[in-house]
Image 1 (cartoon, rainbow, N blue to C red):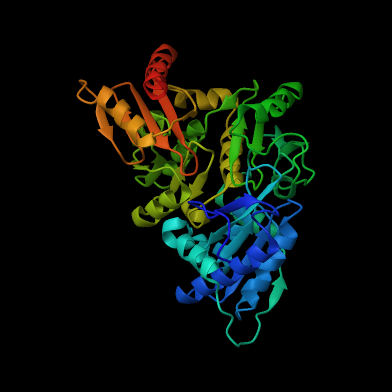
Image 2 (image 1 turned 90 degrees about the horizontal axis):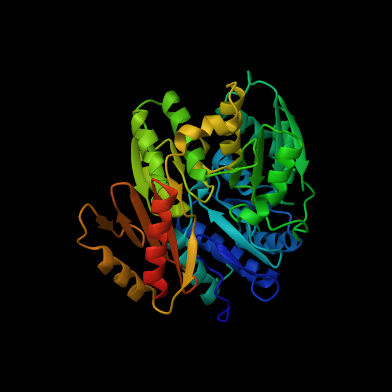
Length: 452
C-alpha cells in the first residue's frame, strides 16, 4: 500500500472514512501492528474495542482479520470507551486497539493503539514503524491463523473505577450527563446505577452521526445544551464527555463551564491526601494555580509537554500518581497511567458528595487566574512568527523564556505559550494572567505580533 493517505498522526491514526480509512487499510494496519508486536516481544493476543460510529464494526473486523492472519489471537470487547479499552489492556496485560475518531465529526474514524498494560504508542514509540510496515507491506508467514474470541468487560471496568474512588457515603446528588451520542451513553448508565445519584441523561443514544452536536466539549458551543439542562433541572453538576469518553468536562450548578485546570487541581489535592509527598504532572498550558495547589499540599509538580504520550512517559519515569491536561485528559497511576474521563468525573462527584458546598464553591479556591483559552492563528511561516514574538519579549526584566513545547514566555503574574500545530499552518496561543485586564492586554499584544 504505497499510496496510503497521510493518516498516521502524532498519537494515533485518523482520517476520512472510505477515502482514507477503509477495511483494506485497517487489514494492512492489523498486519503491520502484529508484526510490530512480534518484534517488540509483546504478548501474542490483541484486545480490540470500537465506538458507535457506523464504520467502526467493519473497520475493526478487517483489523482483526489482519492480526489473526499472522497467528496472533484477538479478544473483541465490543462497544467501549477508550478508557475501557485501556482498562482491558491493563487488566489482561495485553496490547490493544481502539476504533474511534474521538471528537471528530461523523465522516472520520481512526485507531488508537497501545502496548500491553495500556502503555502508549505514539509516533516516537512505534507508530512511525507501524506506518512504514503498512507502506512496505507486511508478509504473511505460513502459520496457523489466530483465534478471535469475545468478552464483555463493562462490569469489570465499572468495578475497577469504583475501587479507586470512595463513593459509599456521598449525599444524594442530581447530575446531568451529556454523552453527545458517544460512548458515555454506553458506560455512564452502568456507572451511575451504582451511585447515590439521580442521573439525567442527555443524548445517550449511540449515534456516530452526532445528530445533536459534535462530541467535542472543549468547544463552548457544544456545552450549551448541558448548561441549559443543569439550570432547568436545578442539578448539582453537569458532565460532558467527548465521542470516545476519555475526556470529561464539568459544568457547575449555575451552568458555568469549569476550567479543566481547576479539576486537575481538585484531583491533585485529593490524591495528595491519599499519597502525601507524591509527584503530580501538569502540562505547560495548565493554569499556574495547578503547581501552586500541588506545592501547597506537599506534592512535587512536574511540567510536561502537551500530549498523552509525553505525560504517560513522564509518569512512568517519575512514579507520578496523577497527571492532568487543559484539554480534559486526566491520567491515573492506578489506571495503568492511562487517561479516564469517567474516573475524573468520579473524583468530582466524590468531592461534591462529601461536602455540603456547591461545586462552584468547591472549585473557587483553584480559580486564581484568568485564561484566554486556545486561540489559533493561520501563519505562513510558524518558525519566523515564533522568532519575532521571542525577540519582542527577550531581555525584558523578570521574564523567562523556554522551549519545552513551542515558545513559553513567563512573567511574575502572567505567562503565554505559542505552539505550532502538527498538522496545519497554525500557531496555538494560550495566555494567562492575574486579572482579566492584564490577560486581555497581553493576549492582544501577542496576537498583533503574530498577525502583523
